[in-house]
Image (cartoon, rainbow, N blue to C red; front, side):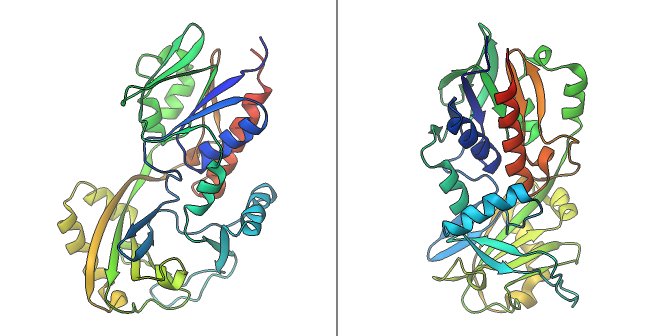
Length: 329
């Protein structure tokens, strides 16, 4: 047999979308399954009334020439705009001006929506089980969908990915399985404030914080994504999130709001809480993807392999796709 002719991609974050785009343009039949109603994963935007929040990934930076080519295309398409060359911290430190940060236009979901355009994508399909049938992969979703392909690329957080393979431990080498089980993630709680007036967050509209409760605060109007209302995104520190991940929204709000009240300044109209259980890997795998099986082809990719940001996830998807194309069965 030659290389796989079809591939199922689990997850429509930027990793899965990048891989699916590359494989599709290389001639494979690619189907993407996404549990949510939209694409982007942690490149997430929420709208509430007239307000808009980037409540997941906050910006894009470039470290490599390969990812820089993607960012150049996205800039040319009007999907990104320069935001800032760095952000100060809450204790008065000077701005770190070593990296240009880009923000999505009109918001962070603009990029994944662009990458997803024209791909064979099934939304609201939560993959529930992956199994090998007659030498090919078959994925059954919780909604009753059944999808098959020669190869399977799984991109969600690793604990969720492994849960798809309860009966397939023999497909993955024991050493690889042990490595995957060691991958752990930090959690983050996002609090989304709608204010009745201006915040006190200084230009360019964001601060890194070091008070043990909050790690990040951003004014989405100053950022340029919420012209209709003044909205503020707060990300908690990882340690705080770990201790409060299962707390009630009221309990979380009561703990976090006093830590940022001086920066909110104006009366609060509404507060929403979003839980990012797998917000960032604690350690990065040594490879940008994992080839867990050749027969049939099974690959793992995501920010736990490429790096804990949008560049890492994008390049992990690209590397996994290139590897799949190089395989001959």
